Image (cartoon, protein in one colour):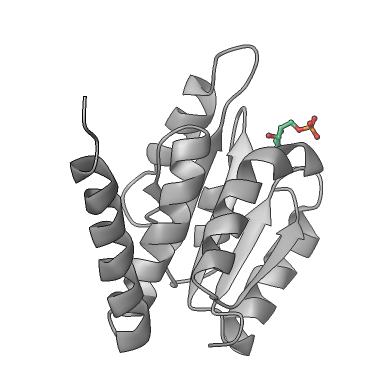
Length: 159
Ligand code: RP5
């Protein structure tokens, strides 16, 4: 699979959290590319990238942003491919601002918002893989293995 997942973050300062998404995608040997593009600082470049990536074979977008986080919604405005949002935690409002900006899309242009922060970043990778797994047996089997391994770790706990 080559670069079926495009990850976009609004700022380099989001990378610490987005690293969790990247780590998991590497674990699954998934093809992905990463860009820093902002809905408000580089709106034209963002639109151009989303349109190009969609033509070049991206199947799912992941968009991570914090604050008045328009990024995932703007990505979704430029494509009908699925868009997964990661709300980044902020110092002022602890990421509630990012969460609401990402999740509260008006009807017609959906964004699948994950949880705030690291959990959301990990789940964004897994959710993207689940979407790709609908038509890719290797990915869906790898996801099933990942779940069984997590279950085995819980069952192995002896208190
Ligand atoms: C958003 O503003 C970014 O996604 C980031 O989470 C936040 C702060 O950006 P910086 O000021 O650190 O570049 O656009």
